[in-house]
Length: 112
Picture 1 (tube, rainbow, N blue to C red):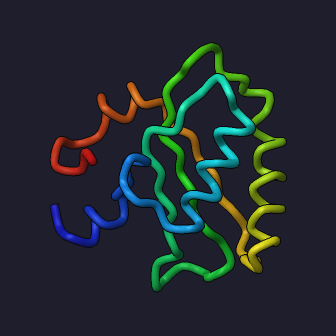
Picture 2 (tube, one colour):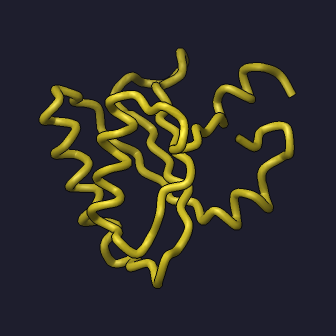
């Protein structure tokens, strides 16, 4: 697997030092979904050949209790407002991955 593919799919453990943006998003997730826990997070800037009007944000989470999927759309609006507060105008593309699925379906060399 080449370096470009590895970097593109790289997630960061939330136990590692987080950037301000990562910490902002992790805290928003924790506050909004009290029955889930963020395990890994990835924020990806658009690649050179993509339009520069979005920010890809992926959360790998585990359950503490039942996850409330109905809250996902509300979370989008929360994230968008948090990004606007810090003058980030790109559109957030948010994805959610269950930790078990991530561990089962990610090649070993990409696991964080």
